[in-house]
Amino acid sequence: MTGTSSSSSSSSSSTTTISKDLPSDYVSAVKGFFADVGIHAPLPQNSFSKDFYSDLIRDLLKVDNVLRGRVSCIFSVSPALGNYFNGLHGGAVGAIAERVSIACARTVVAGDKELFLGELSISYLSAATLNEVLVVEAAVVRSGRNLTVVASESRIKKTRKLVYTSRATIYHMPPAKL
Image (cartoon, rainbow, N blue to C red; front, side, top):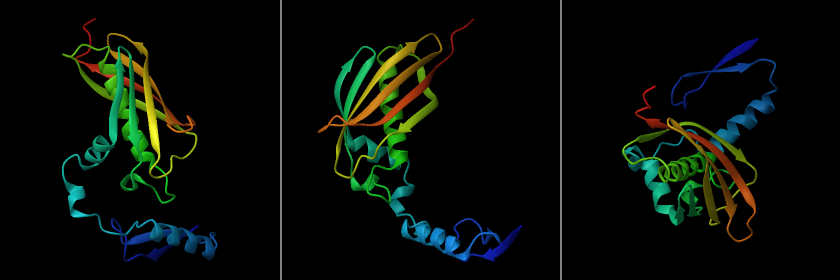
């Protein structure tokens, strides 16, 4: 059974549904968490510019090594990409994995084919804290006429501790004619 409660500060709806079976201290804890992470805070105006998030990633990701089927990059964890717990935000991890995987695929796929991400899976094994430097290494697992699969690992540069792994399926366009 659910009850309805008005919420005047919601960004997309004026009504919040709260289960009557949920203790009020749980509801308060959830509301407090959302307030602490700034869920209702307005976005800065510059965040509405085209490809804003990519600009953040691009400035912090530096190419270290490029070989056929392999790419290595260095990434500095900036406070701008931090999460509530002072670690690298999961969305930033995904953006980095996508960029590095597509770059790696490009080392084995002809330049006349457009590449796009079809699937990305990420394992978050540990946190990369703010101001940490990561080494992101990607390698082609398989490449064929229509797709390339790339696996990547992100490690803390200082300790070599594995923090994130990913596997990306990247499609080639136009597809091969059968």
